[in-house]
Length: 639
Image 1: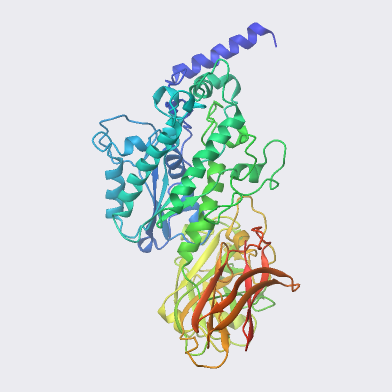
Image 2: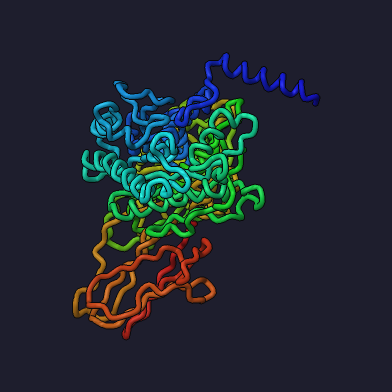
């Protein structure tokens, strides 16, 4: 292309940019030039509306800077919660897409460009007051996702932020800056924690930037790179040094969160490298950021020597943003948060989990036909179609009082728009029985009497394959669970009438490894897309002092993701060992080896070998050994 033509095109693009009201070049903290002004996708924000919306409640508040603002505006938290079967657990926020400056009187608390030092300046900025007011107005919220501090660092040399070799100008200035950011961050955290004793705050990390934006560098990336350099003319900060700055910052934040018992850390440094590669290594090769405190090993994830790929950043027609992830990137980040924190919190404390039986015991019927390839719910040309599920719940201890139970199913296909989303077939219903008839799926199961009718709340839009539907059993449903044998459930839309096929197909107990639908799903977290039943029960099970023998109890949760607790009881004081073995009998970890007093004890296994390496998902065995007894319990590591 002739040089004058290239220059003419560039000048035309700049003119168009300026005519759109976007300044060039940008001030150090002016994110407005990077703004992704694409319209909201209507079915993404604020998430698919539950059919029983009156029973949904906010559980998560999203607060902080532009990362918080984008995550909220994208609607991704509520979408991912829906995907994991917890459509009733809603995220809540109020956002503003540019820094309004001092004197702002609005109600937002997810504000682009906002800094921790602005938040604590309560005379000029109402962000803390807005956040605490939202928490006070929504007493069901018990988790706050806080993204803050990045802009205090990115303020750079010109505005009191971080820059390379800053200690050469003022000795100790880097440590002083981090100490001030820590103080300001904990002022915000403490304000949230003071609202209610049960609130916890998740401090969200950032990911590696990429300032190599080419032609559009003058808008933000070039002046910002210079501002993060002590001597930009002779020693401009490199990509690797930018990443090193991020690793230092996030390492500091890990230390902060480890010091706060109600503070969590969302480690996502290098997450984009893991899923997309770094331009040299492909997807899935570089390490996933570690999720287990206190060290979060591997920390950092990905490759700290290389920036995140340019394709992972916002691109509203101008590829100039070196910081903010695109919609899919934030979906991965929020899925990571959900897998490590939100889903285990929503799932609650479990006593036992059961996978459905499959092998002809899961399927569907319309009263005439039966099939076992899917658990189908909806209608066909004859009328309602009911999905049938079977669980062997005979291992629940005799005399146990079941206090909670939920069934999770994963969508594998559909005909028409999901009736769980559209409401076109009325409200779904779940009936529970020890058995609707003979074992297996029968045509009579459509109308067979149940021990408990309309016995669960149904949550989930099933809007796409891989999305989960959750059946939360009500008291009558809990009472109908058979602790002596099989428990069957019928999922259907009783108001459905004959018409064009409109149904959702859900996986059966015969499902193997989860299908790759792109972004991670609940099936990937569990290691299988088979339906599973979580049960919580109360049962007195221990060994009184002086009783013979020892007892190893079921671990909880099981299956588990990040960690599981293994309780055991000793009749008398003495040496006890608890070891973990794989299915081949190989020793994986030693969790306890030494003397203990009589009574009840527990150990925690985080799914790692003694070397600290995370083991592969699968079945493992915990073995308790004492002088008198050896006992073993089977455990399933889901991810």
